[in-house]
Image 1 (spheres, rainbow, N blue to C red):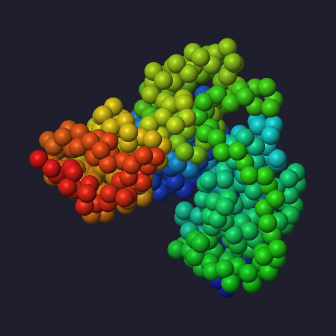
Image 2: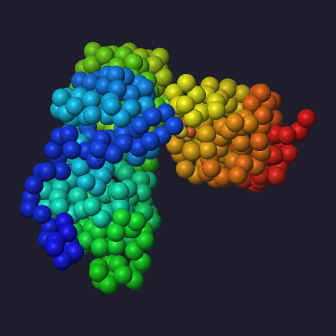
Image 3: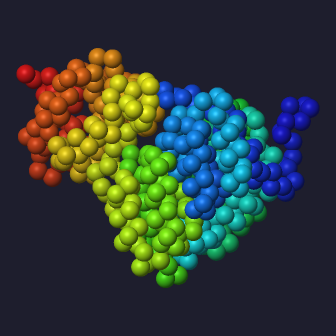
Length: 453
Ligand code: SF4
């Protein structure tokens, strides 16, 4: 914390203040969105018991508009809250025994402590960081979106997740600390036992806090990092490249137990559907969930005999249970019916596109369906279809707020879908992906195709 002289004081005493209940800044400062207030929550360890998840879903229905989301980073979002209901939600979260650590978000391997292939338990490293660096992790001058990631290895590594500070298990008792990037792009700064990486994390957090709330790790230049971490050139990751596989579906762990990974279609579910699904999962023996990056969660404890029934319940209630479903390629915001700012129903359009332009969903393209130009669901996408008072804007390779390549009046969307399907079918070269095809054609060809009579 800042001392009287404005310098950052010594690292705080071991304390689990960061694990206290009811102290989450997200609940203290909800975000205003088109459908009311939104809170983003990360329960301790990304873990909830089944009954805690059910209580949370019930609270979302009582105090918000009943829509829950899991973000690309595996955080929970509750939408449609009002100023007078945020406190009631916080009280219900507290009553359910859900712990929301405060300070910098720390994301850890979703199957920590469950996956026998994990090199080291990421939750233990999180506890070490929080108890040793509690004051720094809560420093008011750190960027609000600063992220720390702890990857203990195992079946579902966090290699693709970008973070300001990455702490990745290399072998038992040895960790690598790297900054600003994913597993391939982050710059390694320290390698060694827990005390080495905690000291490096402490140094980095001090540097970031000194620079203020606008500074992310990527803003610190390499020369400065070299000065503070002179050993950086000699450090290399020694971890074997993790297998890249989707978490969605049934995975048999080395313990012999199976876990079921599910994805929320378009990252969203309605509280009533989630509650029904959790009842089915509970009957099948599930006892806990673990939030996962890329908008989903794992069910822990399901019996193998119950797996088919629970999978069918998931499908019936709108969850994805197979990897590479077309819906995975679509980021859709709450849309009309859930958000007052939306100019169209994003989920309906998603269904139409999956039915009528199947060639688009070959795994290459990220499609963003945004009810308005705010673009809550996604940032940069290969193709965004954005609602406006005049209809729909088609943005190629950009943000929802960017100037669209083509505008289609509201009643023209059916024809536009047909024309998009024909464009991809006619123009895609042999072996070319839909994303590459759209990129090659560019904004002008897209606009001409969509606006043809
Ligand atoms: S992007 Fe979607 S959820 Fe966000 S404000 Fe616009 S319509 Fe609402």
